[in-house]
Length: 278
Length: 260
Image (cartoon, rainbow over all chains, first blue to last red; front, side, top):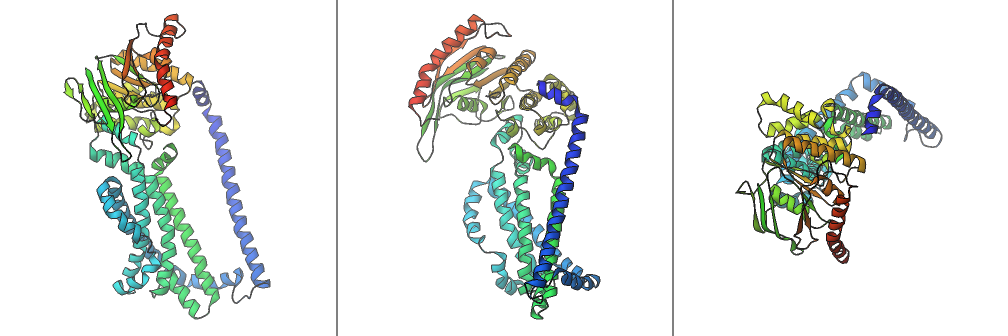
């Protein structure tokens, strides 16, 4: 008890010091990240002008020169918007279905034993493997892309949600039970919030996988989107434009993941901090 | 108030049955402080879970106020050793208590007074906005006590609640708990494997034998005024007596390495 009171006596000095350390950490990691990208670009520029054929591996300056008119004309933006919408619709519906079913499977033993064998087999069918049949089922319109992203998201979120529901601490559920909580309250107020860190982790992984599956889906079965831009540029041997599309994928994936993390930090922080306690 | 008569517990599993408890009988009076004492693996936590209503008996009966115990009941609140697991880490200190009042359906008009009363009782009223992860182990355990008291049960069931705390904090918690017990007149069943802890706290100590087929081998009255001084010769003698009672049990535990 003594040391607790002691640390509470000088909160001002402590937070001041911590704020300084935090600022220093942020500055350090930001400048290192900047340096890392700068070094990579320099190396790329050097290699493609000295070692590689600049047509096959266009140097970064060349790629940026190609990117500017594509940005100005709105070509990249509209293709990005199309791909992002597809990812968003498939990801949100896939996550919703995964969480809903995952929660039920984690809670009801019989349902789990009944469904788990099917999912254990189906989850090896990557979205890419499902493209040919998706095209036959839904054509090359939006629906086939929604379906493929849904397919990739659903299983990942489902498995993580089930695991999270299972690992909701028993003591927490029993404690709530003797305080007077009924089964529904234990489920909604204890089990689901306890599973949130697992659900969020599953969604982040699924988000990354969605970005990986939208591209092959658009290459093989679309007439718009970043994947289609890649495919079209490849047919016309426009390596510059291929690199612009590849960079766009990197930037979009990174930005969306950051947004997702920001959302989690702002809205779900209190649930996430629980992880270290369990 | 609570009566355990000839309770038997057999855990069935695919690997075979484990006969955990046999012929356990114990009567606990209202307002009494009873410690269940024994080496690990003696089934004392199982017995506490049976009293709570979490685990059904295989034979015999447990009655609470003359009603057979068949499920968890708001009159008997369990406190767990791992407070971090038992509390809701995403809620603040105050919200954790509010959660209990909400599921217990206590009218909202009484919430403020109840929260104030019990947070003051465990000296956490200046920490109400903190999250459990910001509290020390002892403070978390005090919050668990306050949350249990807030629903005003008749009985507190405590499963080695202070075993994970350091020695100094544990002694402080003993003082806190005895003070609360004397003020609220709750009946307390307290599981421990620590002889000194049992002597400091209990009116009666139920000493249990090692499993399988554990039972209560002796019931010891502790007739010493509180606060108890463990360096007192009477306490020393009692300590020695219990140690001798447990010695053959500890020996059995060594000879049965598979039992845990």
